[in-house]
Each structure stands twice: as structure tokens, then as C-alpha cells.
Length: 188
Image (cartoon, rainbow, N blue to C red; front, side, top):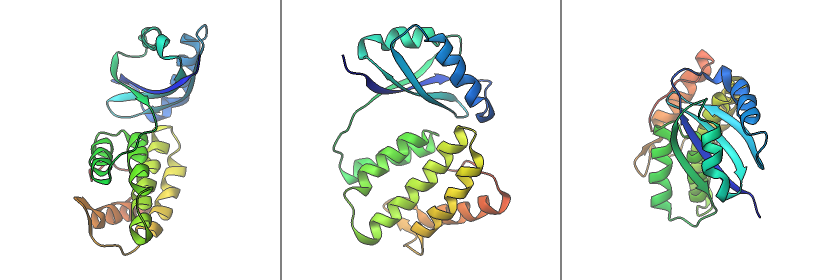
């Protein structure tokens, strides 16, 4: 059987990104007898995200074994799919605004693959901001803040709006976060 990739979100009421390694090791201990692999744990305000490889038939058992950490909030089977630009942007905005930054990255990557020239760089800038937050959720704040510089380079002086996204606001927030050396949640 082939392993499949899933993102599993458990409800989070007590953990912070600083706990990500501890939670990762705890999850690995809880599923140690299963044929599954927990790649990483990201901690958001309302959920803990586990990126896993597992056979589909074992997903329910996996979620049950992780129940001491938290109740299931969301489960998503990650598959390569062709998506239209407008839907990718809509999905990316939803994921970003709900702290699902890795999924935001994936949605905008689908958009990026269909873009050319300056638009491609602009979308890459948005992706890099999402990835910065994903790193922060793994307690890698320094890496996340470092990515803001790359994001700003890609965003450049592009138009202030991209579809319904206020690019100027993303630029301003990224510059502010660099100055305070911290990532602060905002919506796009």
C-alpha cells in the first residue's frame, strides 16, 4: 500500500508554537506502533496541524490515537490537483485568514504555476509571507522574519491590489513586523 499525505488539525486550547517539538514527539510516541509518519507539527491559535504520511485506511485510528492531544478539528487529504486561478486565490485567502498557512502556500503555488512575469513574482511574495507564518508555527520565528525580506523583494512595487488582496497592506505589515522582529496575525 502507498502512503498518502494528510493534514490533520486538532483543536488547540493550550499550546503555543514553542511547544511544537514537544507536541511532535508526543504525537510520534502515541502512534509509534502504527505504520505512519508525522512529518511535523505547526501550532496555530485554534488548532495544531500535523503533516502526516499514512495509508488512508488507517486515518481514523491515527486520529483516535492523537485524541489525548486534542479533538479533531479538520482533516484534509493532500492530492495534486489542477485548480483555476480565481479558485486558488479564494482558497489561499481563506487559508491565510484562518491561520492555515501551509495550505495557503499550496493554494497560491497552484496560482503561481499559471502566472507569468510580474504577476508570478507578486504571487510568490504572497506565498513567502504565508511560509513565514508556517515557520513561526513550528517555533522558527527567526526564519519566518527572515523570509519577510524575500517576500518584500518579490512584492516589490506591484499594484496595490491583486484580485481582492490588498498587496499594499501586506507590504506595510511585513515592514512593520520586520521592525518589531515578530510576526503579528493579520488578514489579507
